[in-house]
Amino acid sequence: MMRIGYGFDSHAFKPGVPLVIGGLAIEHSEGLAGHSDGDVLLHAITDALLGAVSAGDIGTFFPPSDPRWKGAASSVFLQTALEEVATAGYKIVNIDTVLVLAKPKIVPIAGELRERVAELLGVKPGEVGIKAKTPEGLNQDHVAVAHATVLLESVGLAESSARMVATADVEDEIDQVVKGLVGGSRDVSALGRKPAFDTDDLT
Image (tube, rainbow, N blue to C red; front, top):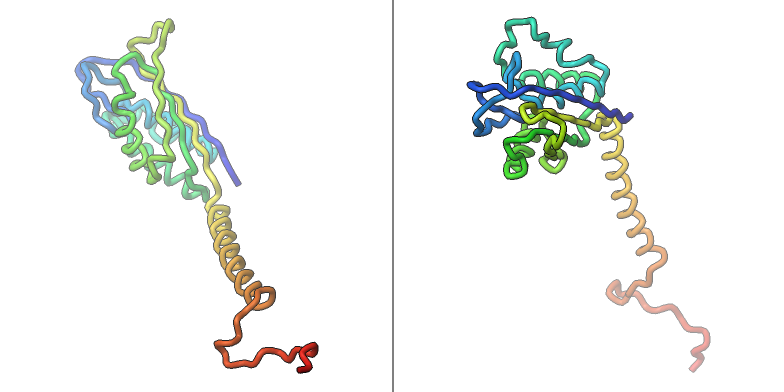
C-alpha cells in the first residue's frame, strides 16, 4: 500500500535564458539549457512520481523531439505526473530532494523554493525537503543536478487510517462514560435518593 519513487535530472547552464528551478524564477546570469524551461528540480520530481506508479518517465509523455514542448513550463509535466499518481489510487506522503550546483546559492531561497514546490504538488511545505550541495572536485561547476525521492500511500489506506482514528476516539469516549456509570462513585444526594440502610446501625 506504500510506494517509493526516485528521480534524477541534470542540465548544463546556458547564457541568455532565464533560470527556473522548482517553478521559481531565480536571478542569475545564466539559465539551464533544455527543450522545455530546463527546470531540473521539477523534472526530477516528475520522474520520481511517474516511477513510483510504474508509469514510465518524463520522456514517455513529453519527448524532446516534440516541438509542442519547446520552452514549455515544467509545471505542465508535473501536473501530468500528479494525475497519473491519482489515477493509480495514491497520494503523496512526503518528498525529499537534493540540488547539486555551484551557483546560485540555494540556502537563502530554500524556504521560498519549498513553498513553491509544495504549492505545485498540492501538499504542505513541511512535506517537502529541499537540500543543496556543491559539486566539489567533480568539475561540474556549469551543471545543475537534481535528485528526488517520493513516498506515496494508497488513498484507500489513508481513508482507512482516518476512520480507525475516528473510531478509536468514539470508543475512548464510550469507555469514559461506562467507567463513570459502573466503576465510579457518584453523589446521589442531588437525585433526592436516601442512602442505603446500614445494618450495623441499630440505634
